[in-house]
Length: 168
Ligand SMILES: CC(C)(COP(=O)(O)OP(=O)(O)OC[C@H]1O[C@@H](n2cnc3c(N)ncnc32)[C@H](O)[C@@H]1OP(=O)(O)O)[C@@H](O)C(=O)NCCC(=O)NCCS
Image 1 (cartoon, helix red, strand yellow):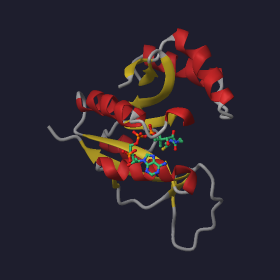
Image 2 (image 1 turned 60 degrees about the vertical axis):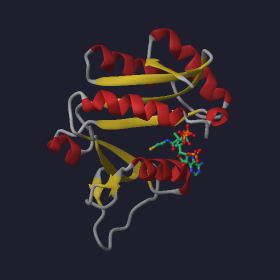
Image 3 (image 1 turned 90 degrees about the horizontal axis):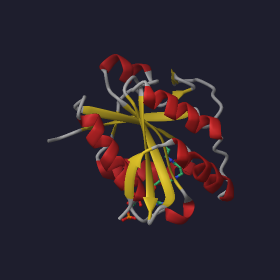
């Protein structure tokens, strides 16, 4: 089992160092911004620890950056990451359980966007297994819905958004 708690200032150096050691670029500034947004209640950032050691994090925003969620009042999970050495041990499952429970306090549906390349294959499977369904709008590239005949660059901005109804 992992302990899940809100991000605090003292977590940040360890988080940044852990991702750097794993070869992932997660700048200090990103977490400082999450803290600032948390203090004005725009975002919740949750951190998972295994026996005190940082393992992963997820965030939840009440006002989604994806327009379709925003219009529907659907809070959006953003930026789920688990350090490679802690993957396949249930860390993301526990983070999502906690974040979805918080979302449920204010909404009956929660949403998430997932990239379409194989880099996001584990996340695609995880979300499908948890009951997330495509939102029916098709994939978005840099926030714009793909149209038949579009030419796009495949990058992290190519996203399929999915929703889960938060049952009682
Ligand atoms: C996606 C990610 C967060 C999953 O974290 P995790 O802690 O390993 O996930 P869990 O251990 O909770 O996995 C739960 C289930 O999801 C599925 N799953 C997770 N990783 C998988 C993988 N690599 N291949 C296939 N299925 C996978 C499995 O069904 C798994 O259950 P099981 O291990 O009992 O078979 C992690 O792989 C990650 O950080 N990836 C890189 C960043 C990323 O893609 N973030 C999501 C952005 S939308």
